[in-house]
Image (cartoon, rainbow, N blue to C red; front, side):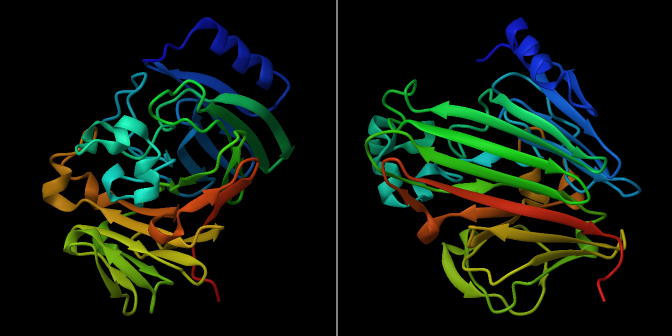
Length: 325
């Protein structure tokens, strides 16, 4: 467990004292940055460098966060944009090369001890820099060093950097640098939860003709036909998406446009009724008002990173209240 000590607060205030429109706030045991500029507002937690909210002025929220979050140190937040690295989801479902890197944890016949979605979403990140770019745009950079303090779990020293730009659009960019002497394999995702009016009023376009793996059907492969309409639990990994993906929300009369960078995969997830009842920090009816579209490098798109090499993954999110002509 990590504690939110006085030094963490002092460091945050020092980094931000000359930056207009950023406030340091505390939610129970967690520290967050509240960003407000002429075009939008956002909340970003130091734990996990996790974007928890984004709301353009005059619109409903774009990013969804559960009302049931406990904001306890070491407890992942349900919602926002968690960072999943160096594996995605259940460790056992990742490429064997990733599993084999994890020493006793990966080599065990039971990988249930491995935390879901990797090592970094519950760790305390540092503020690297912050800037009010202009009246409409604020940029904050976070960093985290991993590897040296993880004997037996992750033995590859890395430096992770997350840059969040809050403006007319929300831009999230994750960079990973291998600062060690050995290469490694990693899966990665920006696990975005989107706020929608009602799952019955939302569809996803931009995936027609794209192959996907359905984890709910024995990990078999299928091809998307037309727009995605969600009427039941969905957990799919779309591979090699061709371009922009759009959440069409008729209930809010808006579209949310996702433009991914260096991310061939897109995970679409909604737990639906029965699974929603079993999830932590998730209300029984929360599935009706959220949809995950997760920018990813997973399965065959997991990355090999040589010694001294670096790579990145990013997404630009834009909410438009009317159809583009």
